[in-house]
Length: 393
Image 1 (cartoon, rainbow, N blue to C red):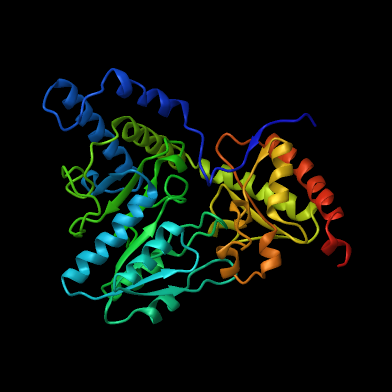
Image 2: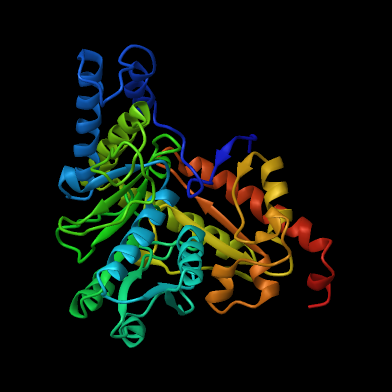
C-alpha cells in the first residue's frame, strides 16, 4: 500500500473547513471595524457577531443571548466555574463543588484552585468505561453544594456521560449543573432545551473552526461574576474587543456542524470508527479499547492500550509512517506519569503507559483506515520485538 498522510488527532484540533476560512477572510481586511463602534464598519462587524452568535446558539437549540464568546474553551470553563461559584457563595448559597476524576485540566485545575480560595470540592470516581454514576453524584451532594461540573464527553477515552441523568439529579437538589461540551458539541446532538443543563462550554477548533475561540452557554436567569473586567463586552461577562473574524468562523463552523448532524453524518463516522476499532483489536494481540463502546462513545473516537510497549514509541513510528495520532500517556510531555484519566478507569500504570488515541474527521476515508490497519500492527510488532516485557510474558 502506498504511503499516505492520515490525520487522526482530531480530538486535539481539527483542520479549518475551507468554507469557514472563506467566511472569515473579509473580516481581516475589508470589514475590519470594531463591533462596538457606531459607524458603518462597526455596524457591519456587530451584525456579523450577532449572526454568528445565532448560528452557535442554533447548534445546541439555545437563545442567541445565552451564548458568551470567549478566547478558548478553557476560558469558558473558568468563567462558568469561577463565575458561578463566586456568585453563589456571595449570595450565601453554599461553598461546595462536585466534579469528576477524568475532567479536562481546565476543569480540575480550576476547581482545585477554588479549593485554595476557601471552597470545598468532591471529585467523583468513574467506572471502567470512564462513566460517572448519577447515584454517586447524588450521594456526594450536601446542603452547601452549589455547583456540579461534569464533562459531556471525554477527550481521551471518548466516553459520553449520562448528561440527562446527571443534570436531573442536580436539578432535583437545586444544584447548578455545568458540562464541558468541548468534545461533544458539533459531533453529537446536544439540545439545551431538552437537557437539564445550566451551562455548557464549546470550542470552535474542535468542530472545524479556528483556534482561539470558545463559547459558554448560560441558561437565562443565571448570574455569573465575570473573570475579566473592562469594556463590558459579551453582556458584561467577558470584556475585551471581540475577535470578529474568529467569531464569524465559529458561526460558520457551527452552521456546518448542525447540517451534518441533521443529515445523520455522525452515524457514518461511527461506522468508520467501529471498523477501525474492530480492525485494531482483531489484528493486535493484547490490545484493549479504552472507554465506552457503541452509542456511549463519540462517533469519531477510538482509543486503545497496547500492552508491553509505550505510547511515545508508537506515536513516533506512526508519525514516520505518515499517521498523526496521540497518546494519553503524559510521558509525551516529559512526565513519567501515565494518564490520570486511564488510571481513574482502573488501569495499572504499565498498561496505561501503552495508550494511543486515533480520532477521525469527516474527511477520513476507509482507505485511510485500511492504511492504518496495515501499518499499525507492524509498528506494534517492531516495538514489542525490542520490549523485554513482551519477551518475558
